[in-house]
Amino acid sequence: MLTLLRDLAEARIDLSPGRYGLLTACDGGLLEVSGLAAPVGALCRVAHGAAEPLTAEVIGFRNGRTLMMLLGDTVMLRPGARVRLEGRPGMLPVGAAFLGRAVDGEGKPIDGGGPVHSRLAWPAGGVRTGALDRSPVRQTFDTGVRALNALTTFGVGQRIGIMAGSGVGKSVLLDMIATGAEAEIVVVGLIGERAREVSDFVERHMTGSKRERTVVVAVPADHAPNLRLRGALLATSLAEQFRSQGRKVLLIMDSLTRVAHAAREIALLLGEPGAARGYPPSALAAITKLVERAGNSAASGGSITGLYTVLADGDNQDDPVVDTARSILDGHVVLSRELAQRGQYPAIDIAASLSRVMADIVPEAHTELAREFRALTASYEANRDLVLMGAYRAGADPQLDRAIVMHAALTRFLCQPARSTVDLPASVTALQELLGHAG
Image (tube, rainbow, N blue to C red; front, top):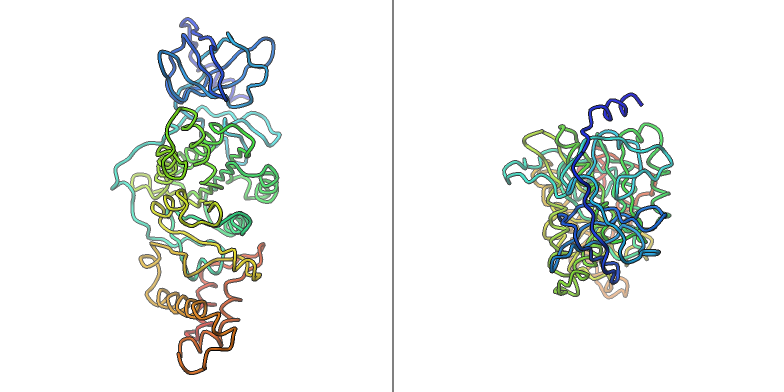
């Protein structure tokens, strides 16, 4: 309370005349306002009678009119409503006040607690730095998942994608990593997902000592597209501000595809033509800009390890969002529906998964073990039908013979209960023992 009173005493009073515009059109969620010049990204209040004012975001301007999109529903909106500019355009609230809290895309609490009071602000688009400010990945990152630690080792400051179709286990794997990973600060963006998943995640991860180092930004699927996009920007801005203080941050975004869907809705509403399977260029550019904001900072010494889920529509790994994410990320984990149907969880397709920094952060012996494991699993999968039909003659291929004998052990190594954690040293030791290279 004392902090709030002190901040109020130090706040500057704006004595300039208040400006407002009038609502002239509402078409499919797109508002047209006359008489109010506001920059793109600014928030405005739309007063409609005695009801609580609605919040809208400026998304463009055309023919002398400002184009806005409501952060809520257009119910009870009427022509001629007054629209006033609010807050600082292009800036989002950040700071330690968000630790231990669950908020929506506007930074308002959804956890039943009091208002989040923070005077710190961060540009919604991030602080652009030179390419050489991004220091290389040199430290290993412990995910707590044995298959990932041993076979696709990740690094601190790496950007990783978890790619799969719906219902294959992306959120479960993400939950395992959030439980087992070590980080000073964990920022979680639950964008466009089911409201039930939000409450479940908060219940599991916002308890005990983990609560004081965790921030959850949640915007479920039934919210407006610009609010979903704003939630992703808020989560990334919070991570950037903590990184600027030299902190090691884990940024979890579930999901990057829903962010692209939100950007697509806004772009199509503005009349931008759909290019790649209905995705306008700006929608794919939005996820590229978002991902590029993660990484290591040479200036502060802090880092953002980005973990993003990517939904492959129709299990299509050539989907534009999947393809764009794969090209910009530093590694990806592919989950297979076929493996999930066989009862393998997490259903990680090791042959299709990749960590682009693994060779630089682990010993050569570890890399060779991972290659040997991949070779055995790839050999078995390539000849699986022959083996099951009994058409393969033992002795024809020594590597396949070994893969057949070890198949059950290899599969057990990839499986792990959802609530368990296996650290990096234990994962490497288990891989050495499995392949007979202990010591």
